[in-house]
Length: 306
Image (cartoon, rainbow, N blue to C red; front, top):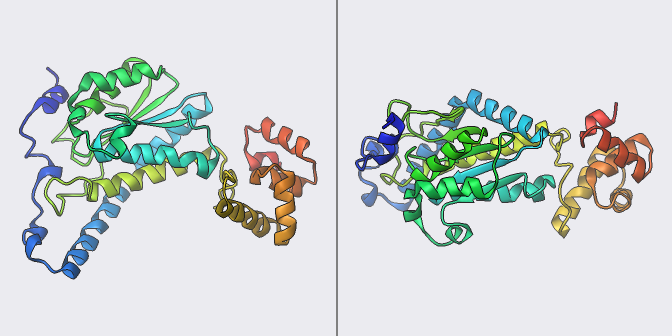
């Protein structure tokens, strides 16, 4: 049995950093509401700092995923419980923010979508289910599988990562415990060591915060590298409601100095595609020409402007 398999099967996980008791919250049940808030604020700052310590690994993950997508690959987040829910959430938010294909970034959650709203934590122990999820999605050597498990030991996640690795996919492993507590055998590891939780073992707290921070950074960084951002504007925003239409109009107006009315008309002519509208204005071309220019540069506005 490998070291990683031994760690997964170890029923006593008290040695893990994520399971230990936090000395700063030993009197949690005697604190006032304000003192609880202050303690959370102090501890949450540690999650931000821990993510910062993993900046190089996160940057490698961004580059790896962007390259995979540029070559026809996809990104899959895999997790159980809070970790899996955060993966599904990040994947679900990419299409409206970046107008990306929903198939491009997907979340795989132990227990399926019903587990988003109803706890099914027992399913995380089924390693074979994780492997089956990889097979069901026909994951191949062009894809990237990003396993998320705060304590590092979730069998479902490792089943998925092992199966993905066998199929030639790139594998990324996220956990909040150090290497000496849980070994690694995947391509990239991201380990923000947030420390013991305020409520011992409740990894929906600092570990969950660190997970959200990392996934936000990864997905946004990937989309930046894919050319879906101009400056700091979401130029591929999906205009599907009044709030997003207002945002699209403001982006066009801010970047072109056109009036709000002129920007709204330009947005309509572009078929409500901000990137296309900007290129039409800056290059003084019609919608068909702008579409061809973007197609030639795989949607990269900066390259289309050259």
